[in-house]
Image 1 (cartoon, rainbow, N blue to C red):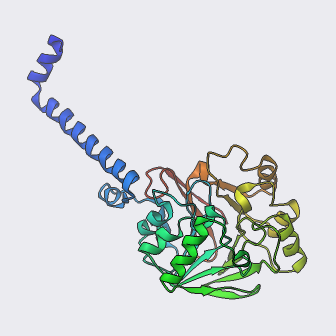
Image 2 (cartoon, one colour):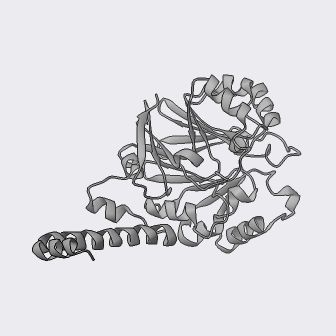
Image 3 (cartoon, rainbow, N blue to C red):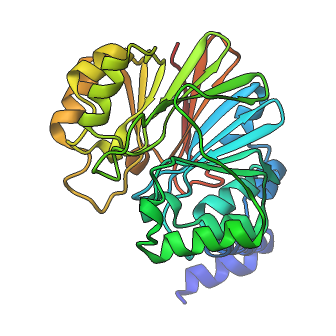
Length: 330
């Protein structure tokens, strides 16, 4: 150590103590955050001590909140309303149990519904992890999702075994069925027939709460969209969950004109350079909607009082972030 540095250290012991304390505090904070990311322990405790409110906590002030969880390539959407909760899809199987950790972070101990849009692994893969820790009252999926009784993958096998072992109620809805969630309502719009494509067999759900509405499309493609348009059902929604991670297989111009969303959310991972499709993105911006992407914005939270919708984003990680933005949509 240079002589001048040595003298400074000796002459100003309080200064040296300050730097030492700061270094220790920095190490503790880094260790806490690292443990959070590795073990899935939330940072809510630390943030509360520091007087900082995370964005998922801000949504608690609203009677309705819809959380598009950052699960990489996959879908997982938490809906909370009046003490009730539903989950649409669970994301892929993950060693980090992204969806389960996020539910625990939000203090979700019970799900009224676990709605599985279809049986692709990036939509049902983490079901077992969630069912191990959180009480699930009922599982909902399309009557066409069973693939004529043939189990086609490990994710499906784990799903069916867990439903049977835990005696979870199974709901197989019809088009037009309505399910309450607190003061909100979930209406099933599709599928009305058995499509050749598993994606087109996705459950399409419309959520209404007060004057606001959301449309969740799973991986539904253009054939399912065309049938929805021909059905004459009300497709308008303030918020559209873009189908199939923004793939070119869906989100046609005609469909967007029917929905007329003020906000769209694409659940997509960063490791897929072809997603979202450029043409789809151009159509989304062309309809003057606010566009959110989980690969760029992290977890997207839309909260509402039944009249307006407010957005919060958390990035990264999806559960308990220090960086975010807040804005109004409607």
